[in-house]
Length: 267
Image (tube, rainbow, N blue to C red; front, side, top):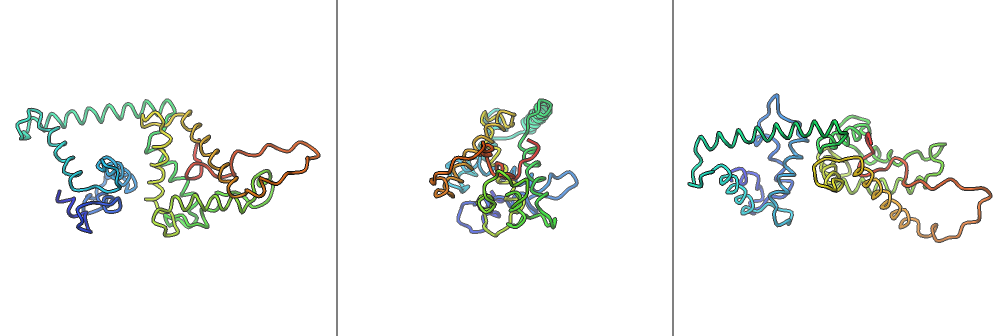
């Protein structure tokens, strides 16, 4: 609860997500050689924030934090005498290590089956974002992100919607990811968006993405993009077109270069 007080910079008895994410940084987290990257620590902190925010109002109130403390204490106090003894602590630590080992084995087995974990998904998305980051400053500007709209002209642009339309859709996605509205995408925002994507794509909630879930996600994104195109081009869609002299190529499912969230990775 002392940590809660330190994180609560506004002293209003509740933590915003921005305040809570500070727990992943010094002095709350001590730097060390085996410390996970900041992005991974922030991802874990965001997941913990979601767990604590039981009433889903976007804040962690003091009562919600205290409830977790009591729940954790009760987990250690196995004989319910309102005390945590050394044997109880040792037992809980042993169980935790066994659980972590089992999770690692499950993770490796799922990877061998071609499934993607949350950390793997985040890594894919961040590596794709790094390809857009031409000046290697750890951020993606609007100009850098606009490249996902594809080429303006040339053979690769044939059959695609007009370039300005594709660029407008890309900027709409940029604005969705840019939660602090500062005109750039930093790694915190990119990681947060990747987490949201993963949660939406994980239909069976087993904390892994399989091929079918990737397929379903692409179908959903394709439908959303088609609806967006129809909204942005109502006049063109309503006008009758002359009969073509020869069969036209099939209309692509979505503008080239655009995929759920960030540019598509290995899938």
